[in-house]
Image (cartoon, rainbow, N blue to C red; front, side):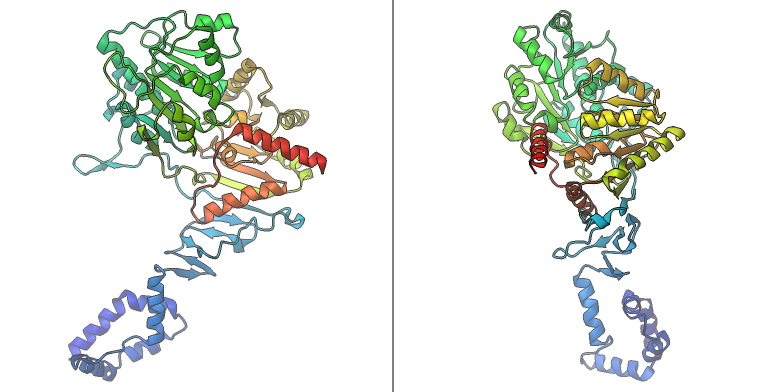
Length: 571
């Protein structure tokens, strides 16, 4: 009996139940509890009663009830007035007022929304307050180790993908060895010839995701069928919203191939009609363009969609909004999109459709219903889509309007002195022009980029920034979408964006795949309507939710801004 009693005591002390008792009741004297548990008479009676079939109470009923409640609640723990699903982790939100700090594994009641650090920021006395969303994990775009056929986890390389040898050689020259998560997930489906809509966080390598399979299929068509490409009849078409992005896609495509292998052309809208016509007088494999110039060439009969085998729409959330969708549908009237898998036989009678975006357009099926069935599109997305970037520090500062110039001058001087590449975003062209003149007056070299500048000037200025001619770029949202900025380390939202999609794209200029530094973001919060968007961002981080209202509609945005301006004038 004594042996069984001591065995029982040892097992009781080593059990998780005892540990939980100590954590719930730390004020109980461990010595008193130990004396009670070691009472041989009590244990002897308990064993006797248990052997007699009677109910034995080893844990006080009040304590047992509390333990049961903890189990029902999913093992929640409390610390510092906060509730956690497990052991408290890293600090995720650091606020000026420490009671609003947020930690990993911290939970909130579904019916009791979290208290926000930005709560009350619409009041004038909130000026000077701030909080920071801290980087708390590595870049989610990178692909982790994957199990091979033997079940051993290891890193997958591009050499293992069924790509043309010349493409693999080009990737080696570019020093790109491993695919990102979206590349690993999407490229096989594209190589099978499926119509695909894929969306991933900014800076995750989406351009390579569609260029590699499209160029791979063009290579194989030419080699397998001894194909002769004819003038005016391109085989692949890539549509983008801006000339800057078209230039960038062209540069990446040329790194992957040569003119002797495949002919890549960029149709520039600023050129004369005669120059546009000359673009198609010689054979071309891939044409890259914005919708307007291509539609004008179609109307003039300079180009035919008869032999288009692959169609890519980049930045699809923008391209399918009301500002571009009309032109897109006009172009697609001459393209026969396949309703299932694209045929690898030549000549294919249908074209493969690829839709690409950093946000998932909600109404794409309705817009494209005239040319394709929704069920024929394979949708692929990453887990981090529509989420705040977890590897980039993002600071939100509440300040009065008159303090913005002082803060921006201080940040610009510091970054320029330290050689930190910086993009300062403004909402309007006038604000962009003023900012450029203001910083130049203080002997800070800057480059200005907005939609009212000539296209050739914009491309030249952007290239100069990439090459390091200047550390500070001041831009409107024309620089926020699709442009690869792996050398940028700091984004400053001098004017806080009005829409969630704009915020996602602006922040995506830092922390990109291939960047040596994840960088950080500074947001100036001035107006009351800015605070509404800050609330949504902070709440999404605290509750681990997707960011709401990420649809991008340029025309609607312009109308909203115009109406708000008119209302302000009226008031």
